[in-house]
Amino acid sequence: MRKTRRFTDMYKRIGITVLLSLIGISLLLTPLQAERSRQIYYQDQVAVLMYHHVHDKDTSSGTITPVLFEEQMQSLLSKGYHFISLNEFKQFMEGATVPVNAVLVTFDDGYQSFYTSAYPILKSLRIPAVNFVITNELTNPLGSYIPSMSREQVSEMTHATNFIDIGCHTDSLHHKLPSGKAALVGRLDQNGQQETDEAYKQRVFKDTNACVGKLKGLTEAPLDTMAYPFGITSPEATALVRQAGIRYAFTISPEMATRSADRLLIPRINAGSPGITPELLHRSIQRRVTAQPGNAPLRLDVATAAEQLGGSAVLEGGALQLRLRGQAFTLQVNAKTATRGQTRVILREPVLRVHGRVTIALDDLQALIGLPLVYTPATGTVAERVTPSVK
Image (cartoon, rainbow, N blue to C red; front, side, top):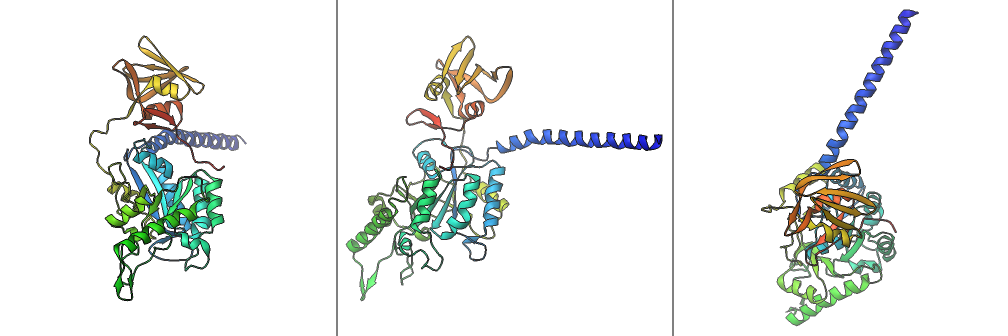
């Protein structure tokens, strides 16, 4: 009996030891995972990803399965990438900040598979995306070789969320001419006569207007973006779509998007081929990161930022008393420390006094108050970043 009790006690001790070890490992992994999620691969640039068709059975060089698409999205999230909306991207191109490791997801063609397969994944993960629609297909969405989205499906997504957007992929110029040139840039040949320059200009201008016109009412967002069919354009075609009101247009040049890029020649990285695994996509983005000399952290005047966010900041001796969003912080000037009540917080960059004003790194302020922020240098304003949500 004693022997049995001894074995029972021994197994209990072993079980407790194993349990404590597992708890210790989990506590160790938590900060390591949190640190990895904050890893900075790049900043002040955006990886614009390009997709077309997401389907379980269809196969092509531009088709991936829903499983692979979700694996890609989950992998990027776990590695610390931050997905942004089309509006945030446009603000970035005009001078606003974006999170580190920023990604914009784009789809071409307006296929119905976006609604049936990609949208549920994007919605569940709260990942913004934009789909560039061939509007001629809206009249008979099931009549095309690959079924397209209906007006009702497009409207449902854009109005049910604040993170699904649409743009133009031309109205009826998504094809190649007999000459082999893309219809957007090539000249028609009718009865042996080549299309005149004026007729070509009118054709492209009218098509762009038709595309925008057919999308009106399907979204409340501005309709000023497009993706060139096949990624092909020309200086003349680009000038014409600009005249028709397009301010941002996307190509298929596989590079990172920076503010130095022409707003009507924005590059994109292909992510929608069946052989692009999550790890391969990660490496593909990393290979294209643009080196940025210096990369000094963006600093904000704490008092001004606090006021714009509805709080206050008062300098008392060598410390700044910050009240923001119902929280009180003490920031030590010329140090990388802050306190919130009895909790000590370690900052990445020191709080500095610059020309009589106390400044803090934008990333540190975001981490301190637990809110994503966007700063626009052109206007000197800081605001809370709009988070993806279902309306």
